[in-house]
Image 1: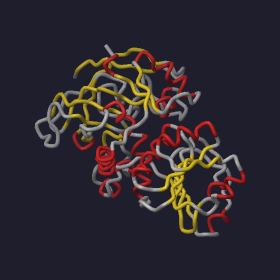
Image 2: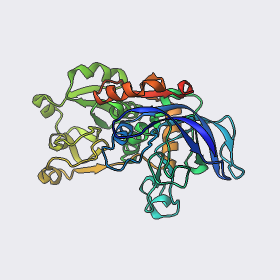
Image 3: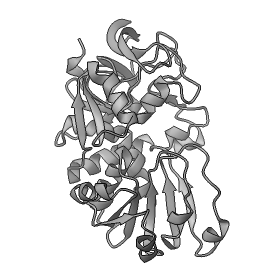
Image 4: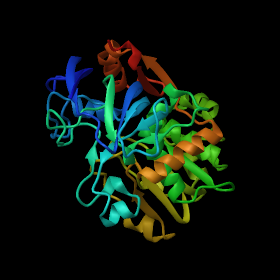
Length: 348
């Protein structure tokens, strides 16, 4: 085992502070990496504050990890020292159940091991995430990062990226389709970039007219102000697919009206109860409402390769590790464009 510098929350007061953790020794199928950058996900703040009631302290967040391989186990074949790699939300699963065999490790029937705050045989009894100097992960859960893309901007791809890419990919978004991205934030801005890169006519759907300029700069072809009833009527029945990134419960009925027949709205933001859904809106036009959770390892690698080909990365604000508490405060106030990324060189 080795002692590793990190930042951790000691309680649900939401405050991070320097901490020392232990990492396991590198096993035969393990990859050890020095962490270069770690994205700051809203899930990190939820976990730190125990908003979901399952946090174990001390808690070291971080599941948007970009690093450089420093050591590999004797059985590792995919990676070598010096490779640029990534680790997302998962670090283990059974790899043998029906879901894992379908490359959906995030839905493992035996329950996937998350990158932080999951029970583990590792030192400390839980997994510790990317707000640290290094990490040891089994080879199957390590991803190759294209050398052509910005490493800091690539970090949020490991969560925000795959969360938005997966449904766009699974529902066949392509050139000639009209796709709406609902909500412009950490997820929504990635949705715009991916849908645009896939060739779709991309429409940002937002309540804020102030975000229209940003949306266009990110690649949106049009902006629909959802608080404008006339504007919503003009776009009714025009969308082949809607990606809903709103992070809290809300009324989805007005958005269902925007769908064409035989079309789907996929939720990736709100992991809580929604307001009542009018079944008539689904039955009329054979419309569907679905959900999606990150992506499996195969699809995440495909996403990273797509980003390398199309030069897609997140729009970020780079911070030092001792600025994380301020970043959490700003994130809670929606004051970030559009993801914070920690430069881990700032961690002594």
